[in-house]
Image: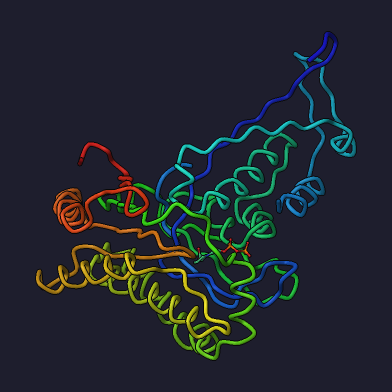
Length: 324
Ligand code: 2P0
């Protein structure tokens, strides 16, 4: 800044998140209100900013820093120039929810800068208005996005089910099947599903409510068997809904299907689930192992059946590199 000017800085860090019970389908497009609850877990730290910016500005407060001689009235925040620098420490090639982490970070950090005093639940509902899944990235650990009942969305917020220390022996392996951009965006894909898929209605009303309760129980008890079964079933049902959409949406490819078969066979031969898989709106596999030992064992198998090569399963990203 030039002489006589001052700069206020705020920094923030938010994690990306992976849904183990998926969000797919909105009941309100403008407010981004979902048709079912969803649950995510956090893997690593890691254009719809307008509504978030507007909501944060509404809640801005007076700010004073006597040392710097800075005094800002709440109505004056609008007149300031804001420079945003953001970086991702998670490879975007992984195609994971980096936009969710980015939006959550934007809301969290701008709120800090503008002296916003709202609690995390309120911040999550602001992040939601940028992108649905972003609301789950306000917290770490296991997070539930409650769909809420109200039309104004005030109760469609994220809550933390357990913090990041609760179940920290889980290991997440991400198998990058393709780093290409997905063909159908989530926003338009879920709009088509809401309009055309009968399976989606059944899923949201009949399946997800019970599944969310069971998942909360599994997380609370660190019950990996139940956690893995629910996670895989929910991923498969989400992709079944995509197929049930007209025109059908294909997010997974042959390699994704082969990874599923490998995990299913291994889990079956061991007698109890060792690894859970889940796929979002793309072909990359998110594999969750119960601990480092099973993760290392699984990775060995994965590399044997899918030797890394260009344009295919080209790289493996592992939460804790030391297991390689
Ligand atoms: C999820 N996905 O629960 C699901 C699973 C993709 C598959 O949330 O339109 O980018 O911005 O609310 O949040 C991706 O959808 O969509 C997503 P918008 P979003 O993580």
